[in-house]
Image (tube, rainbow, N blue to C red; front, top):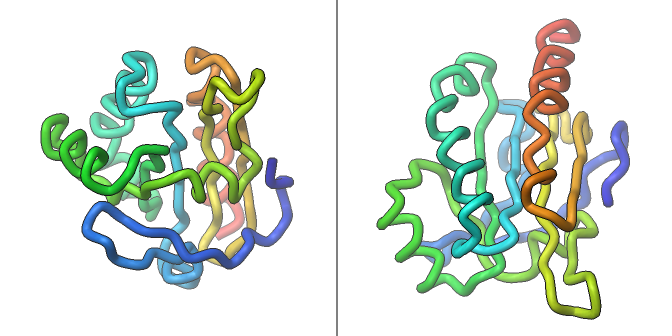
Amino acid sequence: MLEIGSRVPEVVLEDTDGQAVRLSDYRGRHAVLVFFMRSTTCPVCNGHVRDLVRRRDELAADNVQVLVAVPEDRQEAAAWKAKRQVPFTVLVGGTPHEMIGLSRKVFGSMQQSGSILVDSGGIVRHAHGATMPTGAYDKKGIAAAIEGLRTHA
């Protein structure tokens, strides 16, 4: 898992349109909140994404860009994004999860989920992961990290 206060590693990810996405693309412009879903079929994770969608105006007001990372391939993730009307960029494949240390756990049978918040300077301000999806969305921790961005702006 990434350490709070560390620089986010430079990696190239892929979205549902096949476009390259780099967290460094947001540097100097936005903070980035990446929510890592266990699976697009996980009802708990889908509930967390619905909450992020409900909060998108609030997050945008704090200059936070939301990305959702899923372990599925591009086609499956694109179908999920369209069906659920997810307005955020969706990152695909195992690479996003591996990037922050949320690779498969529990004898290789379960993808972890969690979130990271990276400030506009590329520094990790929040990092949280959980094996059980009920503990993956640390809403209070994310809010505290965003508050920290406001006080240090």
